[in-house]
Image (cartoon, rainbow, N blue to C red; front, side, top):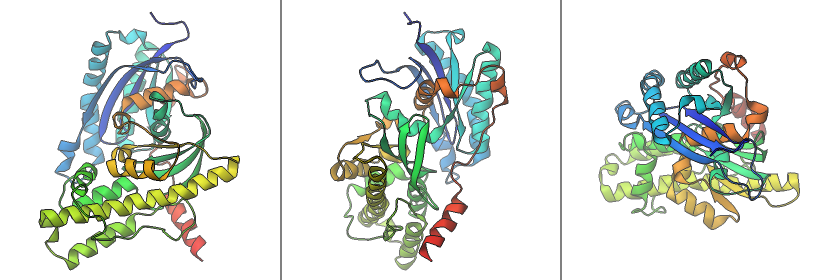
Length: 366
């Protein structure tokens, strides 16, 4: 039986190449210590990895078309699994930014159509905020905390004062960590996506045999850069043609390449935590989320080098409807848009302007 202050919310995620829908029950607003966590009633998921692997990466138009094909069947699936009816949904949470515009609009239009039919409100969700706040699906972490969102398209450190109050402490000025894995994997002939493959191969390699540069290593801030390591790998392969075809050598290359990506995150976390400590006057918890947070070496490295570390479980790290429904539930009060005004919401592709960040980084060097 549903309590009077509980609601059932549907979360829709289509920001890139994964389609996911979740039904979640819970009380709107941030949880108080000891309160019952939101409950995942059902979640369905479709990955386009196999389709997009032959293209070597995400093609926005193809991704958007596949979201369109899969969204309705996934909705049907969660309603059947949860044994509830569509008219029991209180609101819809949907990713509106950041991401690929075509895929974002596909999910948003699906959400609007559902809201139009049932005359219910919509909650626009920042996909990155949802990644880091997903930690509250499994454990209580008090505010404020330092968050690291590390994914295919974004890598940034945040000072999280509350569900809707986040401040950027540092971010990548070019490629994200996930991009570095995928682009490196492409150079090594590992296909797309390459993050999981590199993680597995690296387990059998010597990370000290081949050393690759750590971006912005000498910069005393929380900014990241991964364009240099990709170039370094390409140059290494050009000087050693065919070396990646040797399985043993490939494992060593993957281990060294992965090490430099993770080393940058470990190093810059120190600056981000210090910046946050200077702002609030005491040490803060450290939360890590996003698709790359599934990486076993990253999880181990952060847990071994920092105290009070909380890493989102792999199930909720990749793009998923649960984190969207959860964030929509936590921010329902200030963020929900009532019907019919919600039908005017639009999507936005970018979160951080990387061109301006590069100019700021160049200015710091002068």
